[in-house]
Image (cartoon, rainbow, N blue to C red):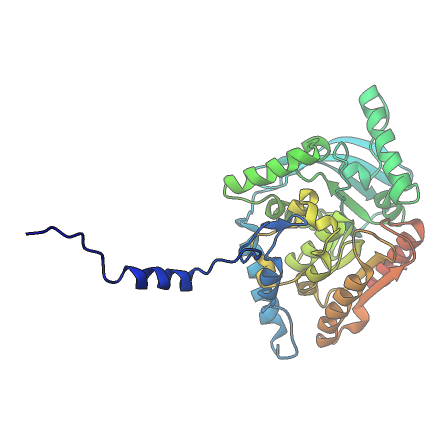
Length: 392
């Protein structure tokens, strides 16, 4: 019997099927390569398409209080923080006379995890006063924090002198040579400013270190931006608790990252009754574009709550402060915030104040100039705040 080699009868058909399923093409590419561009995934447009902000205000919202409460809850959820009711246990450790007001170094429990040193300015005149929580910027400058907004204490030693010189240079660069907090205190306001984690007493960081710090906050089940939001809310509560302060007249004021912090704490805290925010507001669509500072990481970590932008855009979060008196500034040539995106955000927010019947309590100004809070804008803001608080 002859042995014959048998060929699988369906082999040619299998090869043909494979060729049809996986056709050979010599000069085409139908797979993803590269995977990133401009520090974003190549599929960023697909991700953007999913960002519809379903919790944003719309004309269909009828119960504004319920909308605000639901929005606040979502923001707090994204911060990864827990409520904190730790007693403040404040102690004044130093004092300096500054004419019509007194500067104090005060130590208090900012949270149950952090006891900090802050700068506090208190008018000498009797009675309760309006107050302002000052929120410092980022600026890539970490050796000073609270000293950016309030003049540091005297120059008794080399370290104090160096800090004062650094703070003065910052005031010259961004604030027309004066400290915003001291200018308000001279008008009769109680003023408080504390360092965020990484600045001043709680630093200094470097640009690279802050990215590692942000990562390790997440590794610890927390969030750097969320911790800052909690601390700002606690600072507002502490300021409002002081015997010299009129609890119905407590503003939050900030420049750059401090502006973000100001409108955020205005949205999250009932202790804050008015907001002034200079040079931080735009839509995410306008910020997440090639060349934007947002695409570099670094400072973005201070303002990034995981997952929040799936529900609320930046102007939507700020609108949770409505109908509180709120004043925004932007620089027409501010390279960090494209003016078209700024105007779109302002228009979106204005509609929420209108829905509250409080259009006259919202003002948004695009002024000539760049990323700064000059004397003219400060004076306008302080006059505006006096009017909102009924202060002559």
